[in-house]
Image (tube, rainbow, N blue to C red; front, side, top):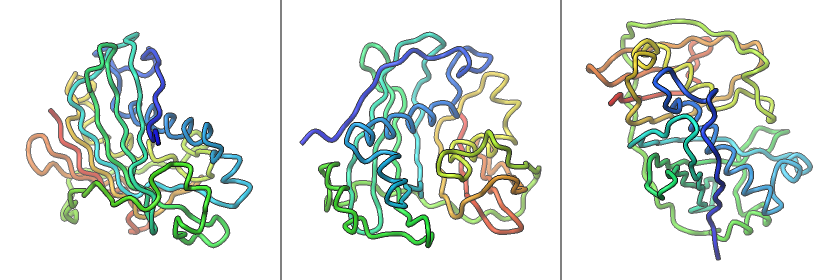
Length: 242
């Protein structure tokens, strides 16, 4: 059974930084859209989830940015379900240029929540998940560990605004990556690039929450950052610049 889904698009000008290359943050938007479209095509999209009181939440994200497309480049975005079993699903994302060359590759792990209880469900409890064609497959991905953040040299606060919220009613996961980049924002604006990204999501944040971004450079190019709410870790980030 075919388990992947692809769509083509042109890189929009508003998705690019001053170097005319796509922002690494916007890449995650493209990936999210591909999984949304695949689920809709399979009949297990947002209407199905809402009517059954379910939602998917992202647990782990690893991205390798080998190269970046430029403004107006034609790209292909791909997502591929890899495993749907027990409490977790794993999914790959990839972005290719017009010649079929792999530019950006990502591995992710997800859980399904009961919206009323906030508890994770065993994915076998939702038989419709069989449509992905990978139910029971072994997990193909192992994710690198992120060491606990010790002392930090950067700290700033953000207030969650309505534009940060997605249709599940919590902060969209892409925004956490955007906030985690705050300590190196000037370097990105000057043309440096993200090489790898690891995010572990611990909790959800909601409208009007006040969050703190704490970061430290572990070496010249490696940023370790946490996003916290009242000392509760919302997500942990490790970002390596090229």
